[in-house]
Amino acid sequence: MDASTNQTAQEYGLSQYVNHGDPYNATAHNGTHTFSLAFDPVMDKAISGISVVILFITMVSLGCTMELSKIKAHIMRPKGVAIALVAQFGIMPLSAFALAKILQMGPIEAVTVLICGCCPGGNLSNIFALALQGDMNLSIVMTTCSTVMALGMMPLLLYLYCQGFPNIENAVPYAGISIALVLTLVPCAVGIAINHWAPRYASIVTKVGLSLLLIASVAIGIMSGITVGGAVWVLLSPKMMVTASMMPLMGFLLGYFLSAVLRLNAKCRRTIAMETGCQNIQLCSTILKVAFPLEVIGPLFLFPLLYIMFQIIEALFLIILFRCYQRLKPASEGKTVYLAVDGVVEEVKVP
Image (cartoon, rainbow, N blue to C red; front, top):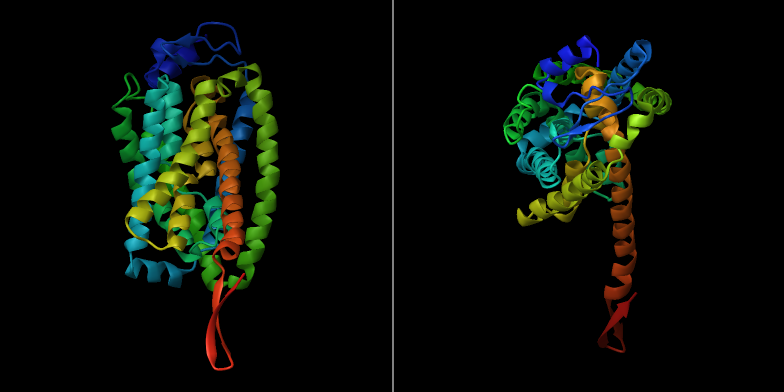
């Protein structure tokens, strides 16, 4: 490993984990990996730039779905939003911390998982809440509030949970994360302004943004594959696969359980479940790619893509279960109808 890479590792408090082997060879030390990758600096900068563009498009599109009147209405009756925020910033970071501890992850993997767990809710939750016939106003307001609150909550939670792992006190780039969070609020505000002052263009911006997002995602996937190369096996290790599959499922189930215990209605329970399990993957990817040097984060900056794959699969499974339940419930319970025949009232079950 060259002197610049070693200096970078020292700056992130990870010099004791640095691998001095060949390019694309990640050697385990004390349960972690630090990477010496033969990467193209131009390609690396291109990936970082596209990551920022994807985040910008996502947040503008998210802003275009928000209405100030609905946000104000939920703020005036904050019970649902308060419970949802407790679920978002309580369940997911704790789940990430628990999985990292149980699976005995090394510092770099632990930081990656914690950053993903501490991110605010993502806009996919709005789509899933709609499919589950949830409270769409609550869904959109929760996504908005969690995005704003993440400015303070995300650095605080990362600081607190990182205390549970040795040698990563300096590994979290708090300044870079804070800057990324501030920058997410600007395009989100632009989207809100478009929806408020020119609502006829909001749907157009959202559709165009989705198209650009798909194109940019494919491009970044191809370039990331070229850049990471053979070191991608670290991302597909059993620890990371288990974590990526368990985190969203724990968020869905525990979010529903918490809202049920606090006696919210069924629509709000389903909404909070989706909002809790769905993370802002675009923000997480951007932080991991831009805030960390590639020789430190290695292929783990692609962990959010692994997370979102399981997130979508598990959410679709829950949606299918819900739809099946809806179809079977009327048939099993039936509907009571009272008919008057020759002056006699009879109770009849209609399927």
